[in-house]
Length: 486
Image 1 (tube, rainbow, N blue to C red):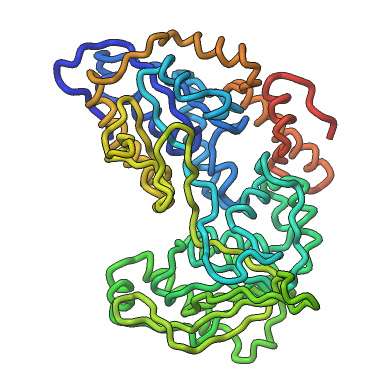
Image 2 (cartoon, rainbow, N blue to C red; image 1 turned 60 degrees about the vertical axis):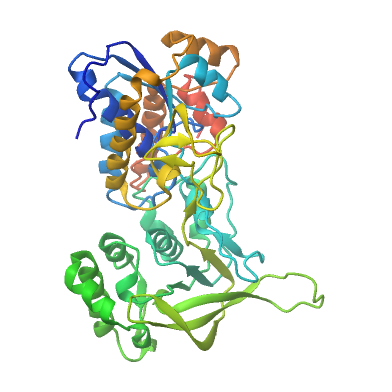
């Protein structure tokens, strides 16, 4: 894939800022450097990649479970792009505070927003704000060592409900139910290991509104559940319902066929008497359950919210089209914690219009639009902040290609930056004392984390790396300071 420049466009340097150093931002920068206009010599580009975190990779570092085998492949691909040296990385730089839109307009001809989506989508049911009710994305940030979340997590529940049937829901459920020692081969931070090690959990329940053929997770996510040691997977025959749309999907989609086949094999192999299951922990998969209310414990003060004591669901049935409708039958599950994993949601950016209903920057194919629906010259978007939190990593590449193609089409109409000198932005950041990090700084931090893992391996813990969590420590190591003692 390559983006092309319109015929006859005169060559001149193009300065581009990309806000967000996750896959969306890196792919956009990479596609621009490999565009026909650049490779033919008709255009030269200078690209700077900014991220609010000291380290690159965005959601790959802070949004994917540490026990995913595919992480390494994605990180390796992103590393190769940034390690070439033709794209500069500036970490620990926050758009809106460290850099304003006016700053970017001064130093760049075009700006691409690739800030993704990191917040939990809302689940508007009574009781969702009770103590013991959490967002799945927040939990992911904690176990991935996000620098801006608390180091501790209240893992006190024995029975837990996870609401959602996507990949994040399965990640959350798997990490909650998995024994902490089995995560030591990953990059899990020490504080996360300690928290999970002390968890008293015995049962984790995952609830989906529709049937097995309508789940939104992938075969890889499903198979990974069976790899957890001393964790039994529990399924329920009454949840296995297939309508005409389900049958059609199974026949026409190999991914759905694989997942349904896996689930039906599991339930066929499951003992009729569930008391025969011997694992110390159980992961229950429920389908055809729509959440109605999070139930609180009864307190002496009726006005006090209390803690989570259960979840009420309405049983659903498929309507022939693959959608679900309520049956009027309700069932309560006693749990002491609830995690909603019903999707991610984007965050508004300063001085840029935002669609609060969809959680995206309004855009037309990647061209950022103002409140009147008019393209704002020089502003673009890609990734989840452009199209919402849907699709896998592969979709992000096609998304970035579309955006870069439009940027190149607009080349002649872009507002020329008054100070496009590459060194000018460095002087600005240094003058403001931002404490920005660089690609060389990330290589130092990466080596440090691997070294920490190596030291742990000497004690028999087999750690590939130990992720550094505190932001100030990440910055200190990246900028060449003396690391805190371990």
